Length: 115
Image (cartoon, rainbow, N blue to C red):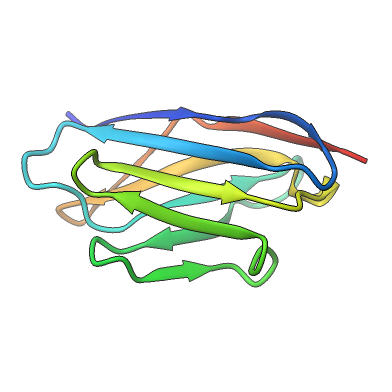
């Protein structure tokens, strides 16, 4: 059974940084794509960034240049480094991993950016 443990959310001021982590377990085969989505109140869930097992990253235009995604395959962990945070980055951030073509979601971690 795949389990995802997210950490690193919190309350920060605009311009500050946070790093989110998501540790995945429950697969002897490792994981395919790993990434982060976010959902702000009243809005649809949107992709923030994802990264393949080979390290190819895809970053949303809204965060490009400010956010960086990385992963440690040995630890089955994906990271989202968020710099120069803006109030519009406020949302619940969800970890997303793919294992054998099945998508799994974390429970979500709140990121709040005050102006």
